[in-house]
Each structure stands twice: as C-alpha cells, then as structure tokens.
Amino acid sequence: MAKRTNDVTSAAASGMLYSFLLRLLSFALTQMTIRFVDPKTLGKTSIRLELMSTTVLFLGREGFRLALVKVAIEKEQEKKDGDGDGDGDEKDKEKASRIKTHSLRVNNVAWLSVPTSLLLTSLAVVYHLSTYEAQFEIGNNDTSSSTMRTTMEQTDYMVAGLLYCLAAAIEIMSEPCMILCLRTMDVKTRATAEGFASIGKAVCCVVLLSWSGDNYRASSFGFSQCVYAIIVTRVLYTNVGKKLQMPTRLKNENDPHIRSTKVFTSLSGMIQANFDVSSLRLSVFFAMQSIFKHALTEGDRIVLSALLGTYDSGVYAMASSYGGIASRLIFQPLEENGRLLFSNFHGSIVEARQSRKHADVKHIVQQLESVYCVLVKLVFYLGLILAVFGSNYSATLLQILAGDRWGSNAEAIHTLSAFCAYMFTMALNGMTEAFVYGVTDSGREVAHLSIAHSVIGVVFYVSAPILILRNGQGIGGTVGLIMANGICMIIRVLYSLYCAVTYFSKYGDSNDRTSQPFLVRSFYLCNQIVPKAPILLSFFVSWIIMNWSKTRLNKGYPLLSIQTSIHLGTGIICFAMTGSLIFHYDKIGARRLRGILRRRTEKID
Image (tube, helix red, strand yellow):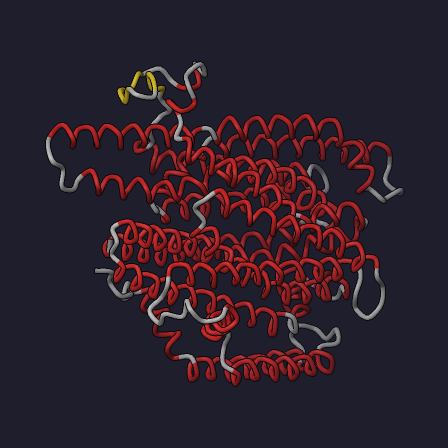
C-alpha cells in the first residue's frame, strides 16, 4: 500500500512538471496564432465549432474515464487478494480466472467509448450540415462584403465544421489508450501526447494562417485540429499500444475462457457476460451527470451565441483564450493529477476498512486530508495572484501578446481583467471538485452531484441574461457573462467543500472531530485552506496600490514609456512583498508541498 501511494504521488508530481513544460511551449505558439486571426474568425471557431467538438468528445468519453479510473483500483486490490494466502491450487486458479474475466469485461467497457463517441460525431456532422448557413448568417454582420466573398466565407465555415468533426472521430479512436494511461497512472505518456499535439496544432495553425491570408481562415483552424488529433492518436498507440487489450467476447457468464471473436462482430451475447456491469452502470451515471456539467462548463459559449453579437463574441473569445491558457498551463495539470492522488488514497482507505485495519484508516485519512489542504491552498494562492495582479495588468499583457490593436481596446481590457478575477473561483472549483470526483464510488453519490450541477446550471442560465443585458457600472455584455460564471463557480466550490467535510467526517480522522458540529468541522477545514490574515491583507493592499497605478500611469501610454515602466515596477514590488509574507507565514504549507513533490510524504504502513 505504501509503495503504491508513493508511486502515485511521484508520478503525479513528475507528470505535472512535464505537462507544464510542454504546455508552456504550446502557449508561446498559440499566442502567435491570436496575432494572425481577426476577432470574427476567432469567434466562429472558438465559440461555435469548438463547442460542437468538445461536446462530442466530453459526452462520449468523460463517463468512461471517471468510472474506469476507480475500477483500476479495485482491480489492483483483487490481484493482491489473488496473490495472497490461498488455501490450494484450485482456489488460486479460480481466483486468477475470476480476476482475468473481470479485467476483460472492464476492458470491453473501455472500448465502448469508441462507438459511443463515433455515434455522437455522426450526429454532429448532420447537425452542422443542416445549420451552418443559418449560423453563418447570425454571425455575419458585415454587409459591405461582396456576394462572392460571402459565399467563400460560408464555404470556409462549412468545411471547418466538417474538419472539426473529423478531428473528433480521429481523436476518439485513441480513447482506449487514454483510459489505459489513466488506469495505470501513466501521466507522462498522456502529457507527451497532449503536449506535442498542442505544439503541432499551433505550428500548423500559424503556418496556414500566414499562408492563406484572408482566405480559408476557419478551415485553417479545422485542419489544425485534425493535426492535433492525429498526433495524440499516434503517440498514444506508439507508447501504450502494445499493452492495449483488444475487445473480446466471453462464451457465457459462468465460463471465464476467452474466444477470439471480437465483440464488435457480434452483439448477441449477454451484457453480463461480456461487460463489467458495475463499471458500466457507473459509466452511465457519470455520463448522465456529465451532461449537466458540460452544459454548465460550456454555458458561456451557449449564452454568448444567443445573446451577443459578432464583435462581442470576438472580444470574449480573445480574452478567454488568454485566460484559458493559464488554466491549461497551471490548473488543469494540477486538477488531473490531484484527482489521481485523491482516487488512489480513497482506494487505500476502502482497502484498509475492508481489512478492518482501523489504525491504518485513521492514518491514511489524515494523510489524505493533509494533501487535500495543501493542494487547495496552492490553487488558492495561484488564483489570488491571477485575480489581484492579472486584473491590473491586462492592458499591458494585451499589448505584449496581441499587439496595440487589442492593447488599446477598452472592452477587451475590461473583459480580460474580469476573466482574471474569475480564474480565482475557477481554480478553487477545479481542485475541490477533483476531490469529489476522486472519492465518489457509488451511483447515489453521482446522482447527488447531478442534482447539484443541475441546480447550479439553472442559476447560471437565469443570472447570465440579466447580467449580460444590464448596462452601466461596469456590468453588462461580456463582463456580465463572466460575473454569472463566477457566481456559479462559488456555489460549486461551497458544495465541493461540503462534500469534503462530509467525507472526512464519514471516515474519521486523527483528531476525532467526527462528533463535533458540522460548522465546527467546516471551520477547521477552511482554516487549513484559507491563507492567514496578514497574507490576505497584503493581497488587498497590493490590489489597491496597483489599481491606483493603473488609473494614473497606464492610460494608453506606449509599452516602453516611463509611465508603463513605473506601473510594472509597482507590480513587481507588490509581488515581492506579498511573496515574502507567504513564505514567512506559511512555512508549514511550503514544507508539505515540497514533501509531495519530493516523495517525502509519510509512508502508509
């Protein structure tokens, strides 16, 4: 148990670093793409076409991923039981046969992600071909263009949509390999595939945009998406293809021997004989729940397409592209590897409880709670830095990355500033929700998540139109949309914290706080997550100083002007002072984080 937990910790830490470096290179290439593209094209591809693509991929594979990561832990425990103290050869053979049959059934469930996603992709193709003309007319407000030019742009949009669907079909063929990486905690292979694919996509997009000029801009994005899918699939099959078990058909439920016939050639066998029913049921539950989660996650694009015009869509797409880069570079690797850590800690707890090792349960829960608090506090700090510092330097950032055209655009500056503040709530939600998904192992718990997300979705779709259509006081338009997202993220964070407190109360902990009132236990957990008062005060004072500097010194001056230099120097001084307070008042948290990264967490005996 100790070896498995420490191996997972090491794999997660190294995977985060490797993934970060690859995504950093991808970021440099992506920002070049933004310089080449106009807001109108970026709005079409980033809002409509990517929404269609991500919907197909997310709904087709997310349920299988979440369910089968948990099955991997149960499978490992069964192997340990099979290797244990058997009473005879026949019993050992029976255990080994049962484990092998279970493994094959789980593998068949993993392969179901391919036909499921291909079916969704086919529906997306039909939808795009039947609606692309209407979508193009809605997004095209330029009446000065000639008829020939408009026809070319319309054809370009149609081809781009088909290319996005093709890319989704290619990428989904690698899903069994991706699930295998998740189940075996092969973080490096996944990071390599996604990192190099992102780099290839960005390079391809830059080359095509620079070559095509004003023609085929949307198709350039679609072709680049195909390049991404091809690289991901190629790398995954190269690295883990030999370990991949093809789908097989079992003779019947009571006979574990395998027949060479592939599952896809015959569907006449009993579901119970060919598929692991528990993991299949959990996959369905997670897939149903992911519908609400995806509707909430992509709600901004849905509402944006319905309520705002082409110009606002382009501005929001530009701001969210830069804001999303921080999420992909920093928060997404942390969340994904955090979910792996939480899931494996939970598996160790379940294993110890089944073995009635109460001392081990208490010790593992204590270690899990410590890791949870450290990771949530880490994203708390990172989110605060983005909210406080990023919101006051959005104009300078746009000047550096996107040029003077966007650096002098007031709406783009306000939108990016609001997005930086929103990233704080997004960071907290990502890590706290990663814990909830990591320890959820029953259909009832998934149903509770579905209900919570559906309620939050209603809150978003009610509040978003109100805040978007409200004008004045810095509210309305794209900023109003970001505010609606922030409100929903706060609600999700509160619910995830509630689940965490309930979890630690259920399994007990080293300080025996299970008998205390819920509010007391909640306060104790939040006290370990929220930074100390001097640190929070430092962030607040820094924001006031930098905001004053922005309004006084950063009023459209050139990037190399004295005023801009003073404004940047003010931010550097504030950052240094705040950082010194963090290291002074949070030495314990820094020590625990170093322990996670250096495999110095306590061993589980």
